[in-house]
Image (tube, rainbow, N blue to C red; front, side):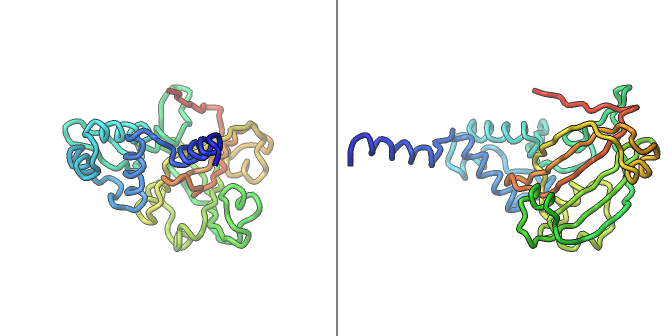
Length: 250
């Protein structure tokens, strides 16, 4: 084997291993435990000292890994109490996932009313968004969300039926992400959103109480699990006459 080829293979091997910083390896190990439900949402994690001893790393490395997870909203640091697995409570959803804010700057968590709930074979758009097989089935939820009693947005939600068995027969709560985590062990860790201005269709306009063709903000959101797997596709049509979309970049 030539020296050049050996060097290339070594580089390739190095890339495969990743040679990630140690704290990233610790982070990935801890995330795997979240995925495996070793710690449930809201549960306390062992202390940094305990984790360090168990994993054979320094306490500083564990602290850096937990800091990274806290920045990604996977865990919550509580001064003097320790580190806890993040829960999808209303406060967290409000600041991490619900970006509509009143023009007066007030954040309000919307109430929800289910307009439709069904199951069926995934269509082409659902298969593409959720990375599903051709014969996969989905659960579809259509709901109206209101703020201070006034319609604010209408949502069409598609979920892989295999991840949420029995959900279609349940009463649908306002806090869906909390339901996913607590009942089905599926934690929404992050989302990808695309925004576009569109005209409300007659069906959506009727739900929102506006005239067909009224300008609305379309939010096309894909929710991803801790393993970066698509778990929900949500299309929201939002009225923005009294609200705006707020994204805080850091």
